[in-house]
Image: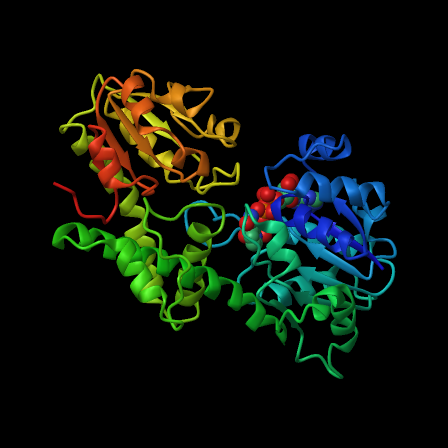
Length: 444
Ligand code: NAD
């Protein structure tokens, strides 16, 4: 089976490589010259565990190719995936669909035979129909279907998520006369290996599939925000947020995942998807006040975290040196999009601090987004050397293993603000630190 994947970013590259691993031929089209050059030279332009081998194996097997020529890629393809970015539109918070529509138009112009055009990008309700209308306008002669197949993979665990998903959702045009059987049959064939492992595969309408993606991400964002607020309350009343997370998470109706407090959610999906859902709902005349509030709380949380660091340093960071461990929005990725480190480091630099930062994967992506004066260090201990205070912003595993005694020797001051709770409060205090974390009672 032949398929085309338009966009070779996180989603396009991972899902393209995974479809190839399933035995399908995948032609990935990427317009960014640097990304394309890297892919052609066998370099993976993003950090994702296991992806280099998966890509190399499938390129070697002749099932995975990279190019910038859409026309070539779509010839003979039964499914054409659109996996381009849908960032927040500047100014109004809507999803910016210009890349989706540009890709659609390019696809329409060069399709020859029947194919199903599938949006894998996260797109607002109604986009599938717009894609269909656009193709019909450009090529009234063409026989095609559209489908929505939102992607639920998580960066850092993307291959596992794609190969063993909790579910796959496939929306087709249920209003089509005679049904969208052909599209459904192609999608079933593509995902056949997942039927074998009994992964749930849900067929829905286009609109349902599109909205399900926003609903899933917004629910998770709301869950994170909920535990963050519980953590704040814990600090006021002397309770422990981790015990509460476990205590409530063991209830199957709640579940244990996404109950880890921190400096607020970031990344390429939750901030933009919550905002987009707010706008989708407002436009539909059915506002989602829970999500509006989630967005608000999360935005202000980042500034509050910066204030908290300043307070831990005695009310001013002017003239102080602060070490920063972790910059990416979560561990096991180099993705810096909407990372909490961005507003927090800008605030600290603006308040007069000198910043020494280390991240195992994200420093290159971080540089254009962080204050110019940030000093990038070669490891965590280097970032801690001579600093007045140390701040943890991402919970990379290697930070958990750092010796508190060694940190104490290297640091000039004794303040640690651990916004990811990677260390035990008692151990840190026993080593002489003024240690603050999120939602855990202070130990006297
Ligand atoms: P990305 O920015 O990493 O990748 C998009 C790629 O598409 C870029 O490399 C860009 O150069 C390329 N591109 C844009 N227009 C093109 C065109 N006309 N032809 C060929 N290539 C083109 O974005 P991403 O993180 O992969 O996200 C893609 C979509 O998937 C978004 O809608 C996102 O919300 C959604 N999504 C992302 C994740 C994630 O974890 N990153 C998870 C699930 C869903």
